[in-house]
Image 1 (cartoon, rainbow, N blue to C red):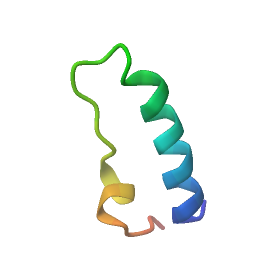
Image 2: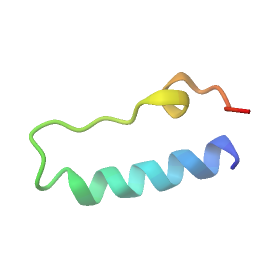
Image 3: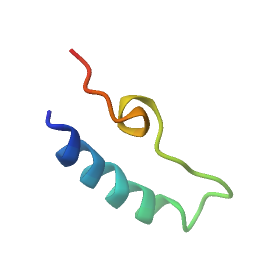
Length: 37
């Protein structure tokens, strides 16, 4: 999956989940901005 597409999906999920979470953040290869093989 392309990094920008993965980031867009992650941002949408974060927006939905942050209403019920005390703390939420995007992590892993998306946060590092490095694609996974």
